[in-house]
Length: 227
Image 1 (tube, rainbow, N blue to C red):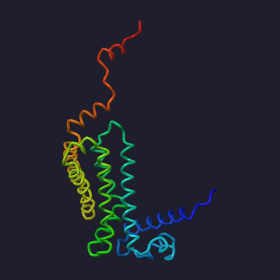
Image 2 (cartoon, rainbow, N blue to C red):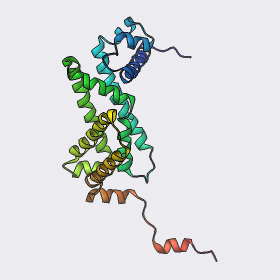
Image 3 (spheres, one colour):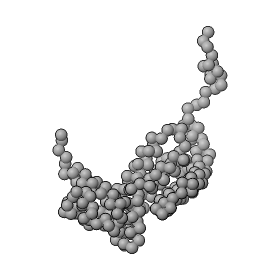
Image 4 (tube, rainbow, N blue to C red):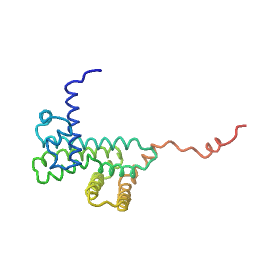
């Protein structure tokens, strides 16, 4: 077996530590996620941790960056694997919702809440969150290119959908209602369909992407018994 390089070993250690941070933030919260707690979970010494991250705040910011990237990749992977004939809007909304139920997002949520009273953490998180929203918007434009081109409200629609499910994730900590969730989904789906799909250019693009319809005479002839 080929021996791993120092860079590969370092990357593996960083991932191991960050995954330990995510578990710790999700299970015991920000203020109980001390460096010792994280080292215990990662089976790593403090010296080994500080060789990868200069301090606790740097580690927390790196965790947020890693978690956001993981969530975006998870969405892309699951969205592209859905059946071609499936409802893009309904599937997309459910995938967004499922992302905001994950350990990764709740770990990030712990950091966001803590940053309200921690100016150093807040300064570190700001560019991470800004870049994540930029990444989400770019992905949305790839998925709905016609709406991105023709709808001047495109960015606002995407931001609204994302922020709605982020807020729902917070609300669900104290109270969740499947009935209310279904109502929200139906309402958001109607808005998203109008703003992302019910556009002249989008209808044309969908028709062009579908195989040409067979004429009635061809279909009829295919059903005849050969003489």
